Image 1 (cartoon, rainbow, N blue to C red):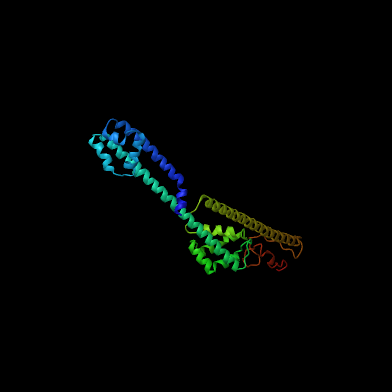
Image 2: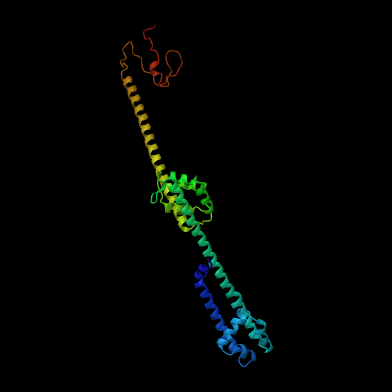
Amino acid sequence: ILIKGMVTATTSVMYVMGMQVGVTYIFAVAFVQLTTDTPAGNDFFANVPIGMHSLFIHATFLDDLAAFCEPLHVAGLEHVLALVFVFICIASLTLMNMLVGVLCEVVSAVAETEKEEFLCERMVGTMRGVLEALGWEDGQNITYKEFTGILQEPDAQHCFQEIEVDPLLCLDFADLFFFADGQPTELSFEELCDVLLNLRESSSAKVKDLYNLWSQLKSYRTKDQDAIARQLEAASMKLEMKMEEKQDRIENKLSHLLTEMRTIPMQAGSPDFEAPLSPGSIAPNGTGRRVTPAVYRRLPKRDNHRG
């Protein structure tokens, strides 16, 4: 892992070292110009290559820093000494620590990647063994029934614990993966492994996951809207049919009533004739009851010959 991390971090290290060389060259040129014709300049900054060497050894790696700074202080080159401390802050404290941080970050990322690959390989091997024990053959798709059988195997449960996957959570989400539009579907072995890896507790949501969630919600909403529209249409048609049936019955009753009314003898000279009473009038039989259309035909006839 360390060797692979170092190889992976080669590019980043080269960038940091390039910055280090550039900063050292700039300060070496400045020091050569500022320490000309001085004992410290003759010892440490005779030319640019010697100045860069002196800055690398004494100001970057901080080897015998006191012996490097003391001649500058004795010669009264306080401004040069201040630049030395600025160079130490930039080269030694910033760039070198940055280089260490880059190496640590890259090695940590490589170690995490190697761990993920190891867990994935272990999960694939365990799942394949469990499926083969259940009668699954390589190349076949996996059904919902086979998936529930996997969750009951102790080896599979131990594998789920290693990759931080909750078996109960897998069972709850199984309907999303093994059913589409209410119909059962099947998953390939690779698709099942991807689903299990995505259900890990350490997995973070990405834009792709949010897009898939939005697509599923949109599909479910469209289906619900269509179902509600069909139900409303069916209820509306049923209500219209009932209203038409009631209207037909009422029309039939009215037609029948009018037919009966036309059969009443309308000759005034007939001894059996009795003038029809209008609704709301008082019956002449002495009962004092108002005549309503419902009881109109049930009133007793008057005897016109009674003295």
